[in-house]
Image 1 (cartoon, rainbow, N blue to C red):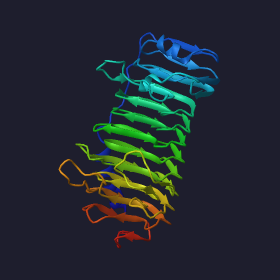
Image 2 (tube, rainbow, N blue to C red):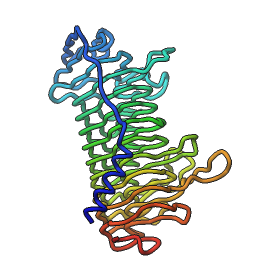
Image 3 (spheres, rainbow, N blue to C red):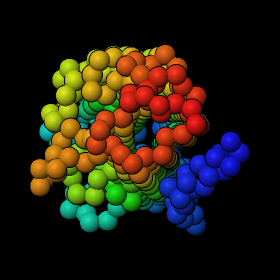
Image 4 (cartoon, rainbow, N blue to C red):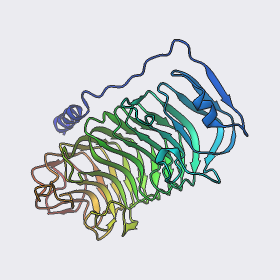
Length: 356
């Protein structure tokens, strides 16, 4: 078993290797302080790269958009962000408001770099709680995102994203999302996700660490998804997570190619070359395509040539599973080969996948 464990971590190391993070220091950083009744957006607009915007305790009704690289936005104490009573959100143009949006300025080719957001409570937005697009080294920590209609905390086409210590519930899509980044170099760690459609979704992305999170009472706890786009999904490490009772049913999930979701713990759909190690996966039950403890299946969406991407060349070892239905470990006929050994469980489909 020691040899197996060493080999497993070596394989995980291959998945994780090469991730890099960092941000340049600012030579002349200033601090801007926002008090209740003042505008966070005005302080952000007046800040320069390397500056910090500190928001004092209170409730602020506005949507904040960040175009400035090197900015730190820090909630000091109990700070709640709620939607403004009128107008539209800059993040989506005339679309729904987003709590905090980090995107390049209109017409800009360059990524927004080294933005840090900490400590906010973001409630009830018609879009996402925090939305990042084409960022580098976006860091979001200790945020509580509640009942935001799209995502709780999300990154699209980001590189070097870090989502740590966040608590997310009530999202109609994913609580935590990393998507559309074939070289994501992302970390999703020590978050809590419950009562969302999906707890943690990694879609059409590579090189992500999903570690030490708790995900429960969603339709799927942790979901690695290939959606038919070129490049697929893979090279993600799912480590040391607690994934339990994700038994909600999502009959009309927003990506239209997905059938009914529900009852899934850790689900790989068309995702390859991943390491799933040392997770505790319990009481995930349902009768959908995605149901079970750890599930490896082909993606429901075909590639351009009509083929379906299967979940192959994955390492699933040293996990602890119990009480999952239809089984603790589930694979379909297409999803082979995979290394599935050393897991503590009692049921599998097909049989014989538990134990050594």
